[in-house]
View 1 (tube, rainbow, N blue to C red):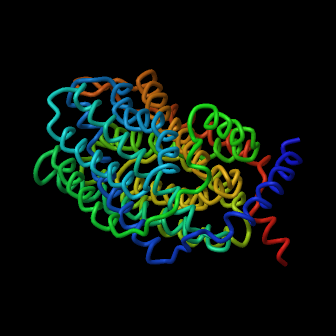
View 2 (view 1 turned 135 degrees about the horizontal axis):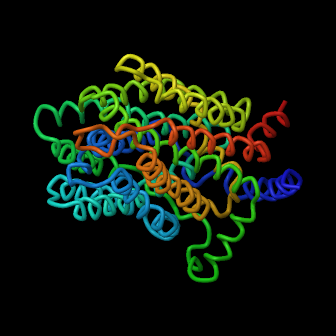
Length: 432
C-alpha cells in the first residue's frame, strides 16, 4: 500500500517541482556550497572538540550515567522543539540573518558551558547551544536544498555532509589536546571562537528569495502543511531510518564510546580524541563519493547498507581491549556511517517540494528526537547493567547490553526503510 501511495504522491510532487522548483531563482554553484560547508565545518569542529571531554566533564559534577547522557541530550532536546519554528522562520525571513543568530547563540552558550559552576548551568548552556544549532543547521539545510538542482543534489549535499564530518575528524583530537594541555574547560572556549568566526563567511552568502507563499504561514496554514508532509509515507519511512542514525550518533559515539574508553579501558582525553578522530576520517572518506554514486543508483541502497553494517559493528565495539582494537572498531564504524551521506538528499527527494521548509523542519525535529533519546536511553541502560569497580569514582564499567540494544534498533530501521520509495533511482531509470 505504501509503495502505491508513494508513486501517486511522487507524480504530484514531480509535476509541481518541474513547474516551480526545477530552476531555482538562484542557481547555486560550488563556491556557494563550499562557503556554506565551511561554516558548518567550523560549527562541527567546535562541537566535536567538546565530544571527548563532555561526558567526563559532566561526571565531574558527581552525577550518574543517565544524567551524563542528559547533558548530551539537552542540546538535542531544545533543538528538537525549535527545528520546526526555524524552518518556518526560514520561509518568512532572511535566511542569512537566521543563520548568523544561530551562530551567535552557539558561541555564547560555549562560553557559559566553559564557565559552568554546577550541573544545572551546564545543562542550560547545552540548551542554548541546541537553540543556536536549530536556527543555523535547519536554515542552512533549507538554503542548500533550495539552490541544489536534481542532477547535483546528492553530490552537493554529500559534499556539505562531508565537510560537516570533516569537522568531526579534527575536532576530537584538538579538543583532547586542549583539555590535556590546558584545562578540561578549554575546548568550550575554542568552540566559542570558531563559531564566532563562522559569521564572516555567512555574511557574503547570496540572499535567496523566500519560497512558497510567505503571507499565510501561520496557524492553520502551518498545520495543513505539516499534515501534508506527514501524510507522505516515504517521507516518514526515510525519516525514521535517519532518526536511528542520529540516535546512534549521540547514544553510541558521543556517550557510550567515550565512557567505555575512559572507564573500561582507562584511556585519557587525548586517546579518546584520537579514536573519535579515526572514526571521523573514515566517515569523510566514504561520505562524499557515496553522494555522487547515489545520484546514479538511488538513495535507498546506500542507506540500507549503512543501517545493516552499522548494526554489526556496533555490537563489536565493546569487545575492544585496548587503543588499537578500539581504533580499528571506530574506523570501520566511521566508514559504514559514511554510507548515510545521501540521507539529506533522500529526504529532499521524498518531501513535498512545495513544502520544503516545513519538510526540513520536521525532518530535523524527528531526527533530533533520536539525538535526545540515544544518550538518555543508552545511558540509563548503561547504569542498569554497569559492572561495579571497587574504589572507582564512576558508576562502573560499561557492558555490552546498551550496544546490543542500539544494534537491534538499527535492524528495525532497515526493515522499515525497505518499504520506502526511491525517486532518484526512478528518475535515473526513466532517463535511460
